[in-house]
Amino acid sequence: QGQVGILPRTAKDGKMITCESPWWTSGFYPGTLWYCYEYSNDPQVRAAAEEMTSRVERQKYTTSNHDVGFIINCSFGNGYRLTHNEAYREVIETAAKSLSTRFHPVTGCTRSWNSKKWQFSVIIDNMMNLDLLFYVNHLTNDSKYKEVALRHAETTMKNHFRNDHSSYHVVSYNSDGSVEMKCTHQGKNDDSSWARGQAWGVYGYTSCYRESKDAAFLQQAQNIAALIMERVKTDDAIPLWDYDAPNTPETPRDASAASITASALIELSTLVEDGQVYFDYAEKLLKSLSSDAYLAKIGTNQGFILMHSTGSLPNGSEIDTPINYADYYYLEALVRYMQVKGIDYKSL
Ligand code: GLY
Image (tube, rainbow, N blue to C red; front, top):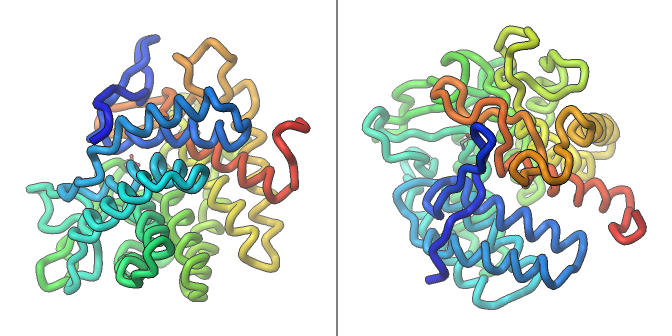
């Protein structure tokens, strides 16, 4: 079942911190390499992407949390998209089956974590696992994957969002589908707007609209985009780690939230007639991320591309540091940017 091995995760005290395949971010470095291969068509990069991808294969059987979507879609999903390696297809389908076991029809959601703290927790991040289900719907023509994904998105739209279109991080459900509680795990407080959570939301609802053409999902994506653009406090548009965090020079920013948002807004700009405002905002984010303030010089930053992301400030983890998913979504956003602009890597 693939090779066991370590993968780059983040950096601390001048050293790279690695992870093994069960950690939720294990698929991002393989995915980053696949985007590098997409840019360059370099066989050496492809070989590295294949090696790193094989290291996460075991996770296709994961039924104990929702992260199988992140892990397998970013690695094997991109690998299959670019190579059509049939062995990858089996991994992706198995992963979607594993994720679907977490869907509870009465609640109308796939469960995020099996934590004792909550009956049935669903985090806004889970919107990102829907792309695995959409992809397998296309691969198999089995509509149940899409049905599960869209039902999850509908339930989340109903319960995760406040009147101003900001999102709670965690919603937990009782077994009859009623809401047990709404709170945070990684945000400043239960009622705050955690920056990456808003980014996961706009990305996820953009995917849902792409797949369903349901106007309610488009409206949701546009509402979240408007909130992000209105609430950002920094001149360069890279958000503080939480939109309710104090606007001081010491408050850490989250470059990963900016990368995810940039990628989502470029896609959103292609799905609506008046999408220029989203494209322009994404371009501003990409310019900021590509400046010396965030883009590391080659040979520094323990090999990561971007500086200044924040993983989980309340838990004292990964604060103002490189993180693999900031790099992944930055490259994804750049691929999307180049596609919209008709720019070819070789002519740069
Ligand atoms: N999915 C966990 C996070 O965004 O940190």
